[in-house]
Image 1 (cartoon, helix red, strand yellow):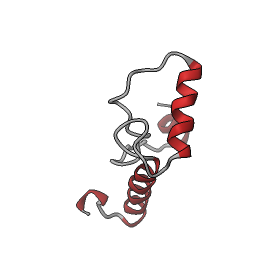
Image 2: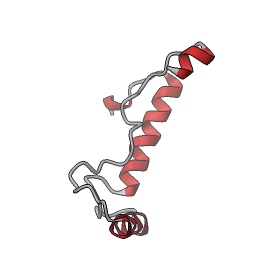
Image 3: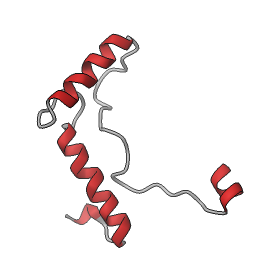
Length: 78
C-alpha cells in the first residue's frame, strides 16, 4: 500500500465512516438519473429519498464515527 510504503503508516477503516447507505438502490448507470437522485437526496436532507438513510442521518452517523475516532470511544454503543 502506498500510505504504508511512503509514510510508514497502516491505513485503518472505522465503522460509520463509509459513504451514504444506498445499497438498496439499483446501480444507476444513466448519468442524468444518478444526478437527479443525488439532487433529491440533498434537497430533502430529512427525508428518505435515496437509500436507507437520509442525508441528515448520514451526517449524524459520520459525525459520531469521527467523534469516536478522536476520543477513542465506540460510537456504536449509543
